[in-house]
Every structure is written in structure tokens, then in C-alpha cells.
Amino acid sequence: MKQLGDIAGVFAYLSLLTVGGGMAAFPELKTLTVDVHHWLTFPTLLHFYSLGQLAPGPNMMMVASIGAVVAGVPGALVALVAFFLPTGLLTFAIGRLWMHLGTWRWRPAIQAGLGSVSVGLVLAGAIIMGRGVLNGVLYVAIAITVFLLLFKSKINPAYPIVSSGLIALGAHYL
Amino acid sequence: MTDPSTTAAEPRPSLAKVFWVFLVLGATSLGGGVVGYLRTGLVVRQRWLDDTAFVELLSISQTLPGLNATNMAILVGDRLRGGWGALLATLGMCLPSAVLMTAAAFAYDIGGDSAASKAFLHGIAAGALGLVLVVMVQLGSRVLKSAADYVFVLATAGAVAGLGISVPYALLAAGAVAIWWHRPRRNGDR
Image (cartoon, rainbow over all chains, first blue to last red; front, top):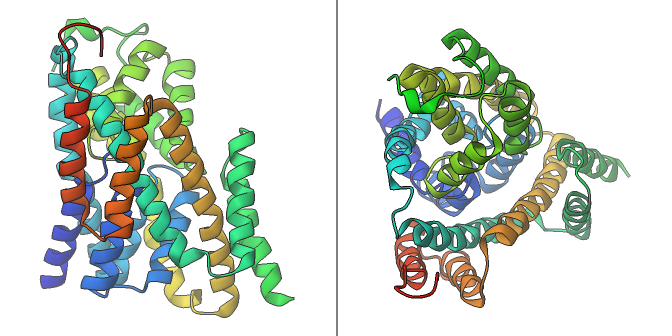
């Protein structure tokens, strides 16, 4: 029971940090699940995060994986509800209110201000992720190639990401 | 629940239809570009929203905490069918990948420790990092307008990734300064 409570607390808290996308919560996600609670190792977290990018739907469903690692299917359910319910209710309420704020003078200021901060949080998440991932020339090359490929073309990201895994697998057997 | 001002181009869909459309979106939006799939599904195919309404709801989704995919499901579901619409749209959106990622955790326990699967997953992580950077650049090109905005980006990233300041403090401090910087001015539009 204590574990389920911890899961609920951690993911409810993390959900409030996902301003501008799931990656904004990555620094705290790493701190809480790896360093504070020792639920999983940093490489495992990176693996789940990346699998989550491949899965369809919302890109942070890997919170279910972490919940499942800690406490099985109940853990996954608790993690999901904790991660989606508080922000869901907030969005529901603000969504109704926002329509009435259409001409509020501070609205563009909040959008522009939080916009740049959330890009900063995504960058912080990418840096922390990079520290765990970029531990060899091969992985640096893969990250740069996928970046350029997705930046220049409109292909489905799933293809280059799966290819990245296959290339690393091939290199493992060489 | 019933708001006459939210009339869409098509008649109001049933709750079952709302759930089904979002379930299909949740099951097929492979590869992380969920916004593109949402636009195709909601604006082009179902014609539940026009592009103006879509962009408006998307900007709310991005400003508020929560993921774009689920925030959009909530806002669109609410517009179409009120509170139940929001709930069913969100459940449909989340169900497929929730099952998939829970199963992945158990599969990882069985096969994740072998050196080969570690190499594969590490390759995927490197690819996903490339994707994160692309998303950041695209988000940035839409949001960052002045030199000050870039300063806010670097200050936030430096505080969190460099100094290890925890995200809520960085978010509140940098957010407050950035919002104040963009505050409404009396003369001139910004």
C-alpha cells in the first residue's frame, strides 16, 4: 500500500510539471524514480521512455511501465490515474474558463512567457537524456542522423527510431 | 453540458462515436507526432472542428500542464459531448498505449537484461533523443520571437540541467520573469 501511495504522489506531482509536453517533466522524473525511490536504473528509464515514444497515443504512457515495474498491474493503474487525473481536471476547468478569457490582456503574455520556459524545460530534459544515452560515437551519430532526417523530411518518426535500434543491434553483433 | 455556441459543422456525434474515434487515434498515432494525427482525424475526416478552433484548443493544451494528446482529447470531447465526451475521449486516447506499455514492462523483465536487447533499446533511445531535439526546434520556432525568449530558454535549461535546480522552482521563477517581460503594454501591441 505504501508503494502505491508513493507512486500516486510521484506521478501526480510530475503531471503538474508537463507544461508544453511530457519532456518538461523528464528531469524530475529521473530524480524521483531513479535517485530518490530507486524504482529503476537510469538506463531502464531511458529504455522505457524511448519505447513510449514509439508507442501510439500520448507520449508519456511509459509511466504505466514504471508503475508496473514497482507494483504490477495495480501499480500501472495508479500511475496512470495519478498522472492524468489532476491535470485532466485542470484542463477541463480551464478549457471552459479560457473561452471567456479570449480578450484578456494577460493571455498572450502567459502564452509567450510559458512558451519560452517550456522550450527551456524540453532542452533540459534533452541534456539529461543525452548524458545517459550518448556514451559512444555510434549513439551520437544515430541521434544526429535521426535529428537531421526528421528535421528535413516529414516521415513518421517511428521508422528512423526503430532503424536506430536495429543499427545498434547490428553493431552489437559485429 | 449543452452549450449552443459550440455547434460544429456536423451534427453532434454520439458518445460511442467519440470514444471510438479517439480509440482509433490512440491506437494508430505511431511515432509521437500525435498532433498531426489529431488534425487529420478531427478536422479533415470527422469535421468536428475547423482549423481555427483546432489551433485555439491546441494553444490551450500547450499552455496548460498535461500532455497535448490528452489535453486535446479533453477539450474536444467537452466541446462535442460535455463532461462525458471529455472522459470517453481521454479513455479512448489512452487505452491502447496503456495496455501496450504495461505489457512492455513485463516483457522487459523477461528479456530486457540480455546484452542484445539492451543494445537495441539503447539505439532506440539515441533515436528518440533525435526526435526530442526536433520537437524542441519546431516548438521553439513557433514560440521564440525575440532575443529575450532565447535567454529564458537557456536560463531555464541551465538552471535545471546544469545547476540541478528542481523544475517547479525554475518553472515558477523563469515563468514569472518571462510573463512579466511579455506583460501587456499600454501603447504598442507588445
